[in-house]
Length: 132
Image (tube, rainbow, N blue to C red):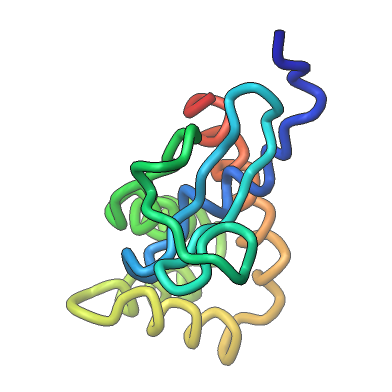
């Protein structure tokens, strides 16, 4: 039986958020709970390419971007500083919202960075637990 204390929830949260590409993937070993990183060029050991179908591991598919986008919307809507909330909400309009939100937060509202990171990380961990 898998020891749940051996599972790295943070690593699963990272895998669920990884929107980079399909040239690399995150997988979990259902027997040990170990999370591994696979690339098309170097497999899971960093040296030997292997097809995903050949591995007895479970693929951790990233969650859709709208899930992570909603976190930014909720954060902007929940800020008590109305001016900061409005500027963050405006940054979320149109293509490139993730970059604009980050830039707006870090450049104009650095006092909110730790609050944002706490919200984002707590939601990511909760999603990882639900995924399990």
